[in-house]
Image (cartoon, rainbow over all chains, first blue to last red):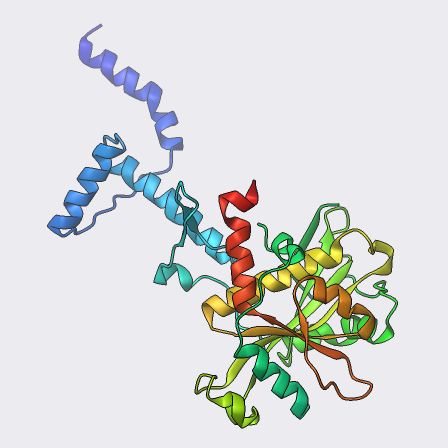
Length: 137
Length: 180
């Protein structure tokens, strides 16, 4: 059998399987030279061969961040010494649920207001054991 | 007992809730949802168990408030910032009596304080104030709430907790030394 015919029949055999796959969509982006360098550096650090792998991982990470903020969770990094930094990314904040509480009027007596002012202007108290337990994550 | 605390939802089961105090039961059953969704005067958070994820076992309601600077006695005004004093009001906190003694009150207050800290971080607030029944004032005092003098007759005891104290507790609680 000539080689060309063999190739054709092979192609015919794999074609139904190929048709079942979803078509891939091309993604093109204009990057500034510095961004291009950043992508190359990150790909090297992460040992990624292709831009497609890079985009797929970046997308997975971004998708996770969006779902966490949508649930009202904050994204925090913690150093080895326990220092925490909260990620504040303006676009992510757009999907976070509002944390505003409604405004209520409180009836105060003059003595209560004096007592409140005295407490507000004095040194804050040390947390109690129960408060420390309450604030444990 | 694995408990989840989240905002009250429309179809949560509140009719069977009984903390032994009619006004607190009535608030949850008749007003909490309307106040949260329709008139926006308080947000209610409920404690639920995984086995019955709609049955409310306990709840608390939060709102914000503020005190105009000029309402404070003159001798204190100098020590205050030249703005209204923003605060969080812990308006109600109750546990169904069938579930009392299981740490639900602690879990609810813990969540209320964490929300207060987030509000302080996001939009600013100086303290949390609660109206405590006289027999519950001791329980709040264990968490560092301080009583305000001068409550009107037949009114609950107002109690104060500084956000700086909560923040300090949060920082200590999350530091490695404390968490060990």
